[in-house]
Image (cartoon, rainbow, N blue to C red; front, side, top):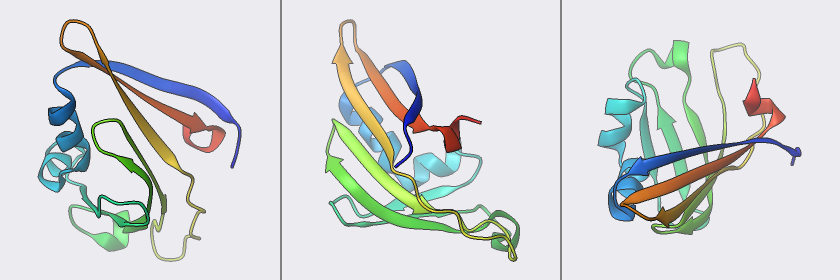
Length: 119
């Protein structure tokens, strides 16, 4: 795995349950990820798919594995991008998401990213 280049962090005014649902629910991802739908088997070793809204020949279909699943605390998965036909598949990097409860009804979500995802 590549060294970590930066850590994306954000504070969200919500509950751990609502944020977990947002990160793992396909209906939510379709609404907020420009139509892309996530499908997860919420267990270590479970499957991950990120399905494009339309035109899979343009957007590709991405599949991978759940590496860590600690409900309401941590979700890490990897996937291989399969962009357009003719483009090579890119090796899947783990994408971790850590959730911590903070005062005043806020959740801190952090996601360390290697150089490949920093650009």
